[in-house]
Length: 394
Image 1 (cartoon, rainbow, N blue to C red):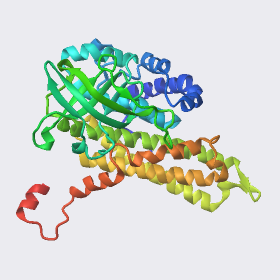
Image 2 (image 1 turned 180 degrees about the vertical axis):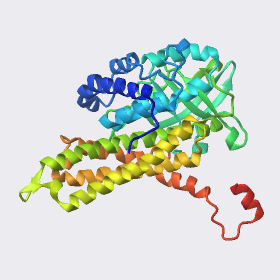
Image 3 (image 1 turned 90 degrees about the vertical axis):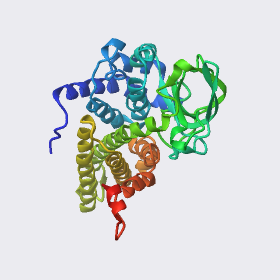
């Protein structure tokens, strides 16, 4: 079934992303995984191809394309090569970008967006802490006013691009108010406000992406680096979670499609008992299930993309997209690995890396359990709802 959500300009951009992947990412994949990071030259190449600033207004050095479908195209194409690349670049384009575009002053835009679009500035966002993951209100990092600025103390963990980031959005508790009004966001520039950085964490998958701990020990941040209004950080985070979760769904499907395509080719070539694996009914049925799961889930995700472009995507629908796409991705890739037999467990076959890379998607951006809780709370489950319950549900 032909997809209808993309216009010719999106498909043209797809070709640009594919060229970048083929010329600059695929040849360096093994090195990036060995070094646990994507080198700065590759980031600058991405900037030259327009992959990091397509959404940035032209006056700040970007392409001026304010359409999430470009994000979706990029996420699909990067994840076909590796989910790690989609994660690393997606932090910039899908997660950090909305904060820098929507919450910054003109002066802050002038200061940060040009180098952000060019790839000279690698960005990150630091929310998760050793004792606070999905529970944002549980963070303990503090920001205390000090003259014309703020002093940050605390620690963050599992921070993508954390070891090399030049610009880090940090969530910290700054106000003694009710929990939802206690968090503020700060843009920390390590060259100006030095921070402690742990070594890159050893992960099960997505090893080409650096993930690290960050430490803030009396780190001074000037008032000019406050993002938005003090105490409004929790609201800012919640408002932008839908796009993050939709991006995760998009990349998960792209990742699974690539694994399935490679597996179909593999079972055509691999023989057992004198015939190809693909000739067995069990194989055909398994692959039929995989294709159906992906196509049906993709229909919902495409609908969510359309809703997001129209500013109509709800947190509940975004949670459904992330839950469905990440769960289906893991099922499909596990089936694909099984069809590779023992070779599927070997790193020389891409399916092994794809299997490892996929597992964390059911955890980051909100676990599958949290997604189910969000969706469940939207349902009217009481046998005899009160009038208040009916009004609340509406």
